[in-house]
Image (tube, rainbow, N blue to C red):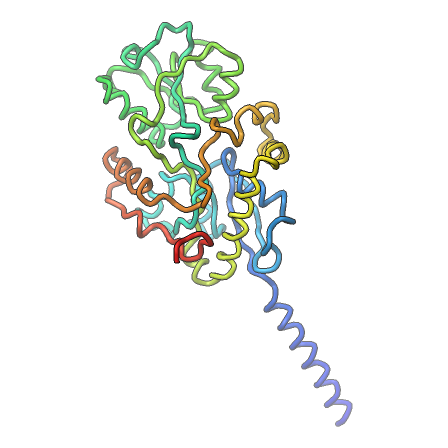
Length: 330
């Protein structure tokens, strides 16, 4: 009986210790990321040593996707908990109630003081003004995308019917420049790093940017599912604290060379090209406090509603949750 009692006691201690170890194991956040313009994510992935909470309050399973739509689909199918996402698929997902998502931090935006998606032509094309595009063929990176809607609005603003006065063909960003140089299109939109590549080769004339319609365009935001936030608030809070640590590291001028190397390694983009614009005024704007710009998000949602992308009027305030953000005003 004494032996049985001793064995029982030892087994109980082992189980208790096992239970404590399991309880101490931090939650894993499954995070979707893509290329380009997610510098904060790249730093977090490659510099975990600078992060205060990684491995203690949370762990991260970083999953690469070709873009925001694929990340959204993975979130909707419950295969991800969070991700860096652009506004259009995020808004559509919320409108369709495919997933309950909350914007928890800003990632990148287009605004004065930073790079903005730019519509260009060749200097040899003879196109000098927006009006000169009438009767010509333009490239669009994706039908129905934010930039497509912006281009359509800017054309209308300048007296051109985007459906009748110009021909618009879908051309992915990586081949937009070559399609223009081959003469398949006379003008197209360029994002970074494709803009930097084109400028380096020369002969490019700028026509317009999104500034004409949306002075501030939230390009990418950090979003979490409301379910994960409710289940693991301390993990999300710790992640966001590390997120701003990575942001501060990236923005520190003394770290620029290292950050360029990190982005080149993760994105597989040429380091020499990245060095021409990354973390300069020719890069997308990273807000120093990483706080979502609710007013800019609302104006973008209004723009999407007017353009027919959204069928209902969404409220930006209800889409944003900064209760766990370390730089939110308390």
